[in-house]
Length: 168
Ligand SMILES: Cc1cc2nc3c(=O)[nH]c(=O)nc-3n(C[C@H](O)[C@H](O)[C@H](O)COP(=O)(O)OP(=O)(O)OC[C@H]3O[C@@H](n4cnc5c(N)ncnc54)[C@H](O)[C@@H]3O)c2cc1C
Image (cartoon, rainbow, N blue to C red; front, top):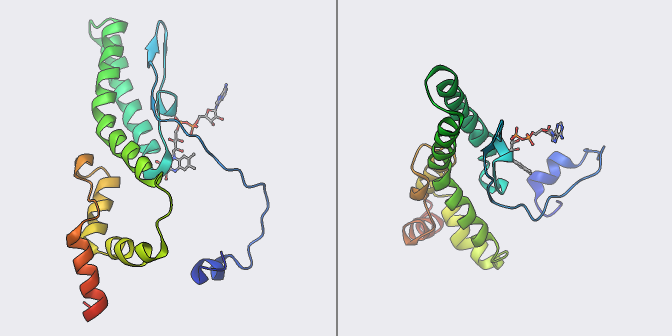
């Protein structure tokens, strides 16, 4: 922490009050969402690495779809099987594109930490680029199709280099 002065300044008077517990080996996938008289929602049905912070959104989205499925079962002449198949299909449609991106990002992270030279140039140029930042926020807020997630590229590198050289 002391290597990052801004973080250290905030934490220097902090006190650890409980044990720090790590998480590892988080799996990514979907479970069979329903059966005879039972149904799964939230992480129980669709679980993934928290790298993209999508779990709460997915849980709310999924339960909204589930509510609609239950309404169909109760108020329309849909069987339990038909209603729950609707839930399964709609949940998949609503979450799968994002899921593929999250899984892809985990694979990228698995290459390990890049050397400091790359962090201080290419990665810094990308992460401080206003267009990249806006695009990434739209991605994690699900305002764009997840497949349109901005990825590092020459446009961001060149603009970052220009900012370093000319200050704009
Ligand atoms: C490190 C980390 C960071 C995350 N960051 C984000 C983030 O930034 N944004 C985001 O959207 N999501 C994030 N998530 C994911 C998010 O926390 C989950 O997707 C979300 O909480 C799922 O909600 P849920 O109701 O399905 O499950 P949970 O929130 O896990 O709730 C399940 C509850 O059931 C209880 N329970 C379990 N078994 C039993 C039992 N047998 N009897 C009674 N109760 C039981 C549990 O104690 C728990 O309270 C993160 C997850 C982790 C691990």
